[in-house]
Each structure stands twice: as C-alpha cells, then as structure tokens.
Image (tube, rainbow, N blue to C red; front, top):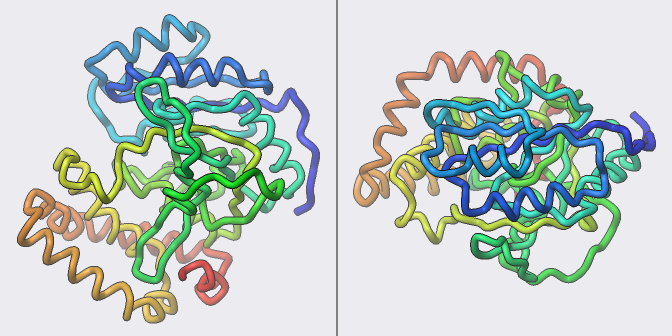
Length: 330
C-alpha cells in the first residue's frame, strides 16, 4: 500500500478520556485548541469523575460531544465508546495529562501520507511534562513501545535527554496510548468482538495489546519525531508502591493477559528462558509483598474461556508469523 498525501480537510476524531482529571484539563485543551490542523472533532468520555472535569470541558469546549459514565468503566471501555461515536478518518487518543504542540496533528498526518497505508499506528515524540500545567522538560517520556524477551513492554528512550528531531518517521513496534493516532481502517480491522481496545484490560497495557494485535494482522507503527507533545507520567514501576491497589492488580493481570492472547507457540518457546524467571519473581512478589494483587490470578482463571476464545480469533486472523515478529522482542 503506497503513500498518499493527506489534505487539511481530513477529519481527526480526538477522544479525550477523563477520570478526576480537572487539574490538567485547561492546559490539555489549550494545546488542542491551538492545533494548526483544524478539521478536528472532540469526543470527551468521562469515567464518573467526582471533580470538575465535566464542567471544565463543557465550558472550554462547548462543541465537544460528551459521553458521561456513572462509574469508572476503565480506559479501554471509555475509548471504545468514543470510537463508536467518531466520524473521522483518523482517531487520536489523548490523555488529559498531555499537551500537544500546535503542529502535532498536522505532522503526524503528513507522516501517515508519506509512509503509506500499511502504517496504522503513530505517535509523536512525547517529552516529560511536570505539574498541573504540564510544564515542558527535555526528558523523553516515550518514543513508542518496544518489547522485550522477558514479556515486558517499555517506552523507547524513557528518561533519556532529547537530542533533536531526527528522521521524518521511524518504524517502531507500537505506540503509547497517551497521544496515539490510528487510521480508522486500522481500528476497524483489529477490532475483536466489537472492541477496539480490549476491555478486559480495564487500564494499563491495553496500548501494547492493540499494538501486538495490529502487528499480527500486518499493520505497522511509526514514531514521528517532529510531532512533539508533553506527558505527565503518573504510573511508573518506581512509583508502584504508592499507586492504588486496583491499578497494581490490573498491571499484574494484564502482564499475563497480553501474552495469553497474542503470543504464538514459536515466540513462547523462544522467549520462555527469559519470561519464566520474571514470571516467577512476579508471582512470588504477589504472594508475599503485594497480596492486594492476588485477585489478578483468580480473574485470569475465572475468565479463561473468554481469554482463549479471543486468542483463537486473533490467531485465526493473523497474517504475520511469529518468526517474522521475533526481531521486535529483544
């Protein structure tokens, strides 16, 4: 599938998901308002916030379509409801703690046009932001997702100093959900059981899951270094002991769910010497130190049939072999 220039009238549907995010929203919405690409529709999905998130978006962006949930349905379910309401040829997932430089959307669309239609996922260069104002720093937050042979997914370049723009685009395994853009054709192709993001993930690792599924289905992902955004990173391994227990539980659950769905036999055998020791460490930590995450294992067992049904559907529809993907797991 070849390159095709994209014009300024291409509609981008921005899906902004909030959960008690009021402190970041004025800055986040200011970045969105200043975009040089004007054909943008904003879909705001609120997950039962108890703060002023809904009011702030309504006042600052009265043109936004608001989908208001009574409870926190999880990031994945919120995004899926936004996708169902979207009319754009592209979908941009935007975290409320992210600020986009004015040409962020425009530069990513330019890269999509240049790279060709096999690229379904893209991210700009995310630098670390700080505080409620998402103040800029020169530290990398994410330049895309990379996979390891231990079963982990990590953000490329995280913590390193930014050293400039580089190439117009660079292929990566996948993209962080903080400010990720997807072709709507990609979204439709990778949807399983009516869900773009797998709602079983609830929160955390759903971006790695959809990236892996996209790779299996023959899609590619890219980093667009000249598209810059700033992101306040609130969930990191270093902060694990200060995070709410339900976040850590989903993190444990999802580390196994990610592989149960997507990892073929070849990769499972190839990566086993690296994955199994780390799995044993994680299980031991849950049994001794982080017992609040024990429900993760009960959930996986209770829902094993649904997980395996999703796995069968993904593996049936895959177009790329594990051997072809093995080079991404380093």
